[in-house]
Image 1 (cartoon, helix red, strand yellow):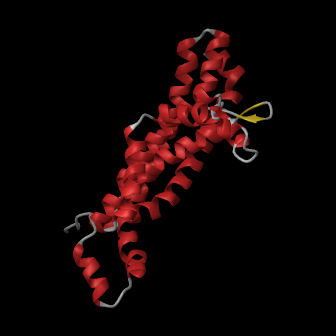
Image 2 (image 1 turned 180 degrees about the horizontal axis):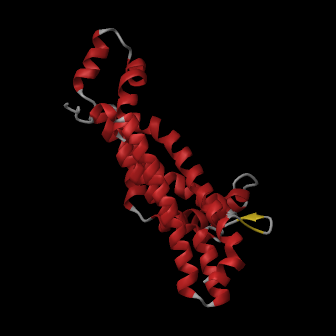
Image 3 (image 1 turned 45 degrees about the horizontal axis):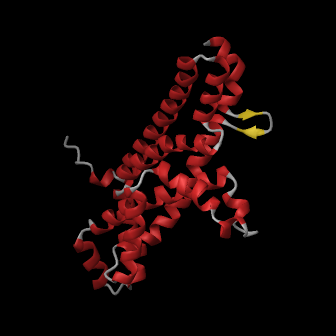
Length: 238
C-alpha cells in the first residue's frame, strides 16, 4: 500500500505529467457541473411552477427525462450517440465538442444535476408560505420583484438540505466519467489496478478520497444550514 501511494499519489491527487487527473479532475467536474446546473435551474424552476402550460410543460418533460433515465445512459447518448451522427461529425462547431469525452461528460453531468436541482427549487417555491406572497402583493410588488425579494430568497434557503444531498450525489456521479476516458479518481484507480494488480489497494485509495470529499461537503453544508436556516430553529429558553 505504501509503495503504491509513493508511486501513484500524484496521479490520484493532481496530475500525471501535464494533464489534470484524479482528485483535481473530479473536483473540477463537480464544481463546473454544479455551478452551471445551479444557474440554469433558477430560471427553469420559475418556469416549472408557472401556471402557463407552454412554460411549465417543456421544463417538466426535461426534468422527467433526466431524472427518469440513468446518468450512465445519458452520457452514452451524448458521447457515443450524438457523436456518431453524421450531422454532428460534419459540423465544424459541434464536432470538436462531441468528440471530446471531457466536454460530453460535463454536458451530461450539468444537464442531470440541472434537472434534479430544478425540481428541488420548484418544490421549495411551491412551499413558500402564502402569507409572504400576499404581503408582497399588498405593498404593490410586481411579479418580478416578488420573486426577487421574497420567493427566491426564501425558497433557496429552504432548499439547502435537499440541495446538499444533490451535490454529494453528483460527486459520486462523476465516477461515470471514466467510461468517457476522463482521468478522474476512478479512472486512475482502474489504471493503477491494471498496472499493479493490487485491486483492493487501488480502489481503496479511491474510496478514501471520495469519503474525504464527502465529509468536507457535509461539513460545509451543515455550517451553511446553521447560518441561513437559523430562523427555523426552535428558540432556546433560559
